[in-house]
Image (cartoon, rainbow, N blue to C red; front, side, top):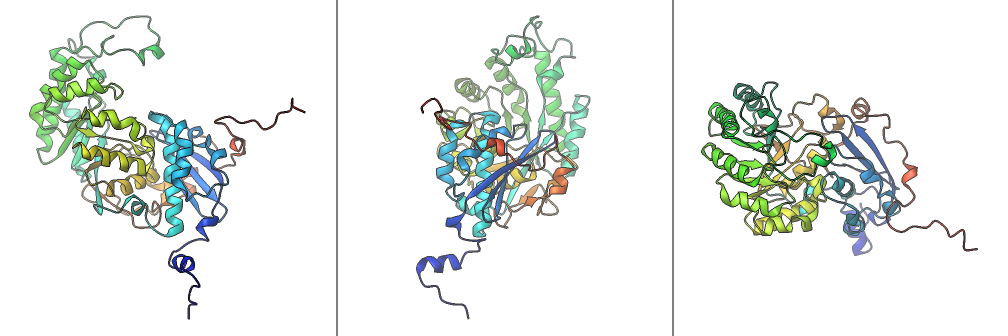
Length: 437
């Protein structure tokens, strides 16, 4: 017969599946492996003194150093104190890929705690609103960017059972079409400087009616091919000038698109607001915005119609849930941007399950043959009728497949020691005052 616990604390702990005592857990190491992919995946493993570990990843195409820089802060800490640990490292994150370290660590901590307590991560976010999550597929640009080429690509996605499809119609496809763009690019400009230049300063951001007509031809052909029962979205049309964005948006109105993505840079809230007010196609933006504080102005101004945080930039699962809940107060639903490994995919499923105003989750890896080999525990099939099932296993619901990861490393280093990051790299630190004897 099981012995009756002697006090309330023991009674609670007896009812929880644990590796050991959670109060005695300590972080002992952080190690990484970088998977070669269409957007490289820096995978994180947070180890503890009790053998249990958590897995996460820095945002796709990010850098392992974005996570390793926090190692000295986390060593010796109890991983269960997620809020305290995140408060300590959040100030060192930033927008875009620079938010990937904070976000990936948050993900790995929740995975670790879920394993310790034997519960899936969605439970830490308040529970589920759905058992299956709708997936929207990003579609590669065809070799020949013609209406027929785009139709063929989108129909491939439809054949996979996907009924929510996005395709990329970038400005660059107009460069071979006479009269599609006005003007000539200025010569002798440094490439690095162009990345921060104002819109409209060179060819590719000055649209003619012929250029707009070409975009319309492509979207019209795709819509006709798939019908109106399929949700369609378009990306990579921008950034363009505000006036050209409005012209484009008005031209797309007949096709009932789910959204036009990133027409304006996310930093320019007023430009996004002006375009959103002027067109009758939903606008979407935000994959590079860091933390709820970074989102507030965009949401409060209703500068876009749909928010699209990437939880590997936004600050992790719980921060993304907070962002989505705040946006819901202003009538803005949530789409989740995602282009990572199966580890982050599972984190997105947990987060999507917990968001009441959720629309769809992106998947950017449907054409990668090795993608499923990076972990164990993925359901088979992964998608059913365009939906993915929310995992019920503890933590994220998957574990590392070391053989699959090793076969796809960007460079040698399969969770090797990272002792060079044990010393503080952030904040004020003096190992000694050798001049003060």
